[in-house]
Image (cartoon, rainbow, N blue to C red; front, side, top):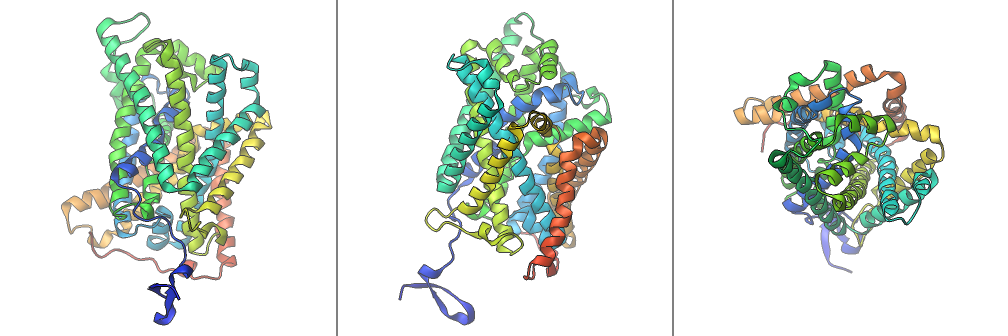
Length: 499
């Protein structure tokens, strides 16, 4: 008989070898969690794929910096809600688990579905972008032709290889994953922030031809053309900041699980605000409006970062920026798989998702099977969208509206936080603001942004988003009648004290 460390039913000792495997606890410190949060947002990728959209599609023009800081505010409020809720209940399912206990198990399950669906959709988009940047690098090196780089099947194959690599790292262990993210963060900050600061100084010092000086109006919300433009821009802004909550999904693998992930989420938000504002300002200084309009009309969104680096720093910087965008894209693919695997793990533990997702590989202590299943679904999506040019075109526009899904699950979490602590709302003035008022305001604003964007975008553009939402309704009903556990009988709770 082996050493007994735990007790089973009725106090009967359970042999250590029979204990259920768990995630690797205490592995990530505050610096690790912050690196994961920042890398999950993937500044280089976000800027490369959405800067031109921010410029043209939502009609905000040079008001891009204003949209970013306005978007930052409600998302920061949601980060505070994650901080407070995680202190009470550090579950890797995060908002899925919290909403199930605080609002309704149906709302919680639906929220979990939206998170997983959003991650799956993005894990189809991101590897393709990584493939496009990889092939673009090969073209610059004259290893392949431009025709080969534009071939959708070649893009699909390279995307599949990148997805396979990040999946392998995720399965291999959280420490390897975190070390990989540290590399991504360093590459991104050196390239994006370093080049941006250099470009701004260069314009201020020597005013090169075809550049534009900084204008305070770029930061003014009054420079945004309309409320519809603000809402559409805010949805993109939410996408810009999306991903910091990955650190909270890794709470069961963090040191001081109830505090470290939430702190990392808030810290990362301020780092991200700086890098986004500085880079967008630098791009607007260096990239002429005519070039931004041309990139928009041709759909070559990701080349804006390459154009900026080449003109602001030099031709050699183009290769550095290309590597930065590529590494950022690969990194965010990995950190999108991470929370999806952990949300489904939490749902499976509650017996409201296929039990195979609750399997934890004993040696590596990762949800290996769930990660592989999600990766294979995304792989299928990659070849499906790349194999049909029409579907590929329609799917590539999803990045403009995916912020609606993010705004939903962020928004409901903010409202849930305010509701959960209603009984102790006035115990502390500080807590009233950080735990009640700000999360509630952030939640309502983000939910309103989502509704406005769907309304303005129209049925066709919003169809993938609406399908995702609508599909969740029959799925949660089906789950209710197919499960035998007590999850859907859970009585919601409210917190009677603050930590």
